[in-house]
Amino acid sequence: QVQLVESGGGLVQAGASLRLSCAASGPTFSSYTMAWFRQAPGQERGVVAAISWDRGGSTLYADSVKGRFTISRDNAKNLVYLQMNNLKPEDTAVYYCAASDRSYYNMRHRQGEYKYWGQGTQVTVSS
Image (cartoon, rainbow, N blue to C red; front, side, top):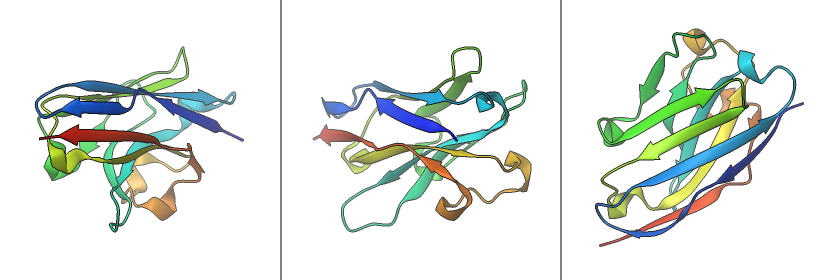
């Protein structure tokens, strides 16, 4: 069983930066594929970024955040981060940390493939 707790959300102005953190519990965290999803009002939850478990740390990003967001993980500390730079109003959403025991390389990184979820943290970007 993996438990995930997000932190770091808030209200910022366009162009600002935020770093989200996800603290994970569980002895096998280092073997999980980790991801950040987001959901805006009236929209479906979609992947923002994902990272593999291995030391190479393969990553993927939604087109809308490429070049602005960076996902990383610290397996020794059971933490996953999402560094968000140059935030835009359209980034406003609830951000969720998610974990999957499936291989990163065999996933489409859709919501249904992730087994464990945090409670979410609100990010609001004003124009």
